[in-house]
Amino acid sequence: MSQLPCVDMTLLDGILERYPREEPSLIQVLQDVQRTYNYLPCEVLERVASALGVPLAKVFSVSTFYKAFSLTPQGRVVIKVCTGTACHIRGAGQLIDEVQRRLRIGPGETTEDLGFTLQTVNCVGACAMAPVVIVGEKYVGAAKASDLAKHLGATEGGDHAN
Ligand code: FES
Image 1 (cartoon, rainbow, N blue to C red):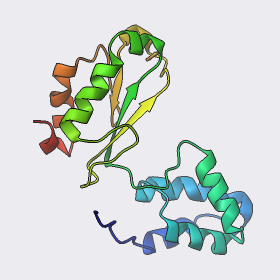
Image 2 (cartoon, helix red, strand yellow; image 1 turned 120 degrees about the horizontal axis):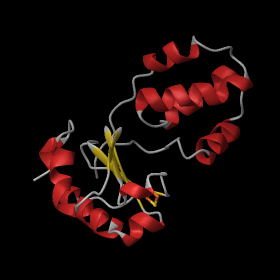
Image 3 (cartoon, rainbow, N blue to C red; image 1 turned 90 degrees about the vertical axis):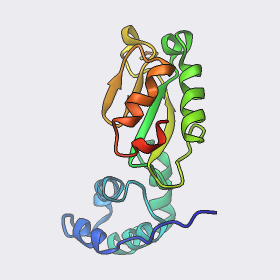
Image 4 (tube, helix red, strand yellow; image 1 turned 60 degrees about the vertical axis):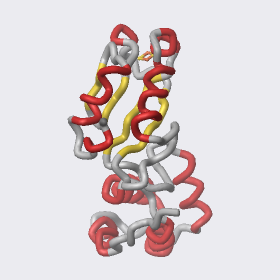
């Protein structure tokens, strides 16, 4: 079983300084925490709850409600495979299989070195380019399984791409 890296709580201090210490700040604080840590670490959520005077149960309920938040560590590069109808028909399944084969992770999972996370998403509004994969911020249209190595290799975790 892999060990999670320690969480640098000083980063949270910088976030909390930017907002009033009250409940309405909760979502903005969580957004900044997600951006900074790439997920919402448990110990950070506990500190957020006490700093803003919000019950921990409410913090967890907000954290699990929004898809943009994750309670588990995410890879530095998130690979999103669109599984909407157009992409499904044009081979999204093979793209998922190829990512799984190369990185040995399934949808919703992250590589042990936190290099990559694989996600499936609903239609991203680019059906004319189907099938679509988003690697980090980059949209790859008409994606082919055989091309994925090059797109994964162009990222910081590229050593997985062979
Ligand atoms: S179904 Fe994939 S972009 Fe629309």
